[in-house]
Amino acid sequence: MNRVYNFSAGPSMLPLPVLERAASELVCYGESGMSVMEMSHRSPDYEAIIQDAEALLRKIMNIPDNYKVLFLQGGASTQFAAVPMNLIKRTGKADYAVSGQFSGKAFKEAQKLGYDVKCIATTKDDNFDHVPTITRDMIRPDAAYLHICFNNTIYGTKYPYIPDTGDVPLVADLSSCIISEPVDVSKFGVIYAGAQKNMAPAGVTLVIVREDLLEYAEEDMPTMLEWKTMADNDSMYNTPPCYSIYMAKLVYDWIIELGGLEEMKKINEKKANLLYDYLDSQDYYIAPVKKDSRSMMNVTFVTGDADLDKKFASEASAKGLKNLKGHRSVGGMRASIYNAMPYEGVEALVAFMKEFAAANPKK
Ligand SMILES: *Cc1c(COP(=O)(O)O)cnc(C)c1O
Image (cartoon, rainbow, N blue to C red; front, side, top):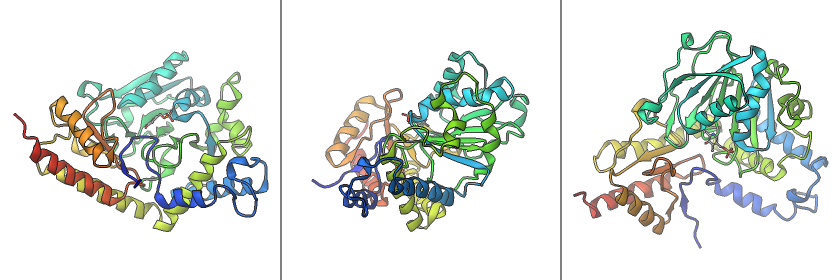
């Protein structure tokens, strides 16, 4: 069978050259005589893999030396609890901006743990069709941090700017836009991301944390959630998600070969522009997101008729354009066009959209 264009929001497509390389090394890695899946995480071969993964990521993201890079488990959702447990002691309270489902969950998790947290901005009343405008005066000056979700996977929105938080550390969930374009890491206190959207298979969660923020962990917090423990042990306090980290390393290699994140951004912009330009040129499909909040990774659209939406997703699927159904909470369609989606995949999608609109006039 041929490979399809998989528009899944996550787990999602991986670059074909990465999958092929993994396949070629699957049974015997290098001279080790075993698969990466079978290796001790303390073996020299594996230590080289995890060290390379970190070094390559530092290079492509231009991560400053005063930041630690951690490869953890538990998904981005585990960080919803880890963030307050590691940081709240800085001042005792924290601020959140709620721009969609995941930032809402992060806020609720901190509340559930009994912390003094405040939602300083939300676009809930507008169905999250844009991200909030955050200015310094909205943030409590004695907040331990401000938490945002940089790219909202479900709604297809992204912050077009990095909020200026002054001295308050900015903590951001970048699960669905990590390594899609250059970001100035120095503007963040903490960046975290589940890998399965744009970086690797599920199983590894990336945390990039400024060193001075490692000093505020709750004394009685679970060891496995404490960033400092993980940082002091080079992400090997216990067994790391070895194979997913290896896959992440192959993805980083692939990005470097492409020319780094500047080049990656150009490719991603070209794909997103093709789709948004088409959406803007017609009135059969509606793109609900306000233009200045549009995500380059997750593009949402509807026909305005739930039955047509359903028909669209199923006919697209039959043509090898998979997983275009929107998130169950919002309906409509969503095309996730992460790094690994080739330009040709978006071309095929736009061609299908035109065909479908012509064949299914609205009443
Ligand atoms: C998918 C996603 C999550 C949840 O990630 P898990 O790894 O499944 O916990 C959190 N935040 C964002 C922005 C996501 O896209």
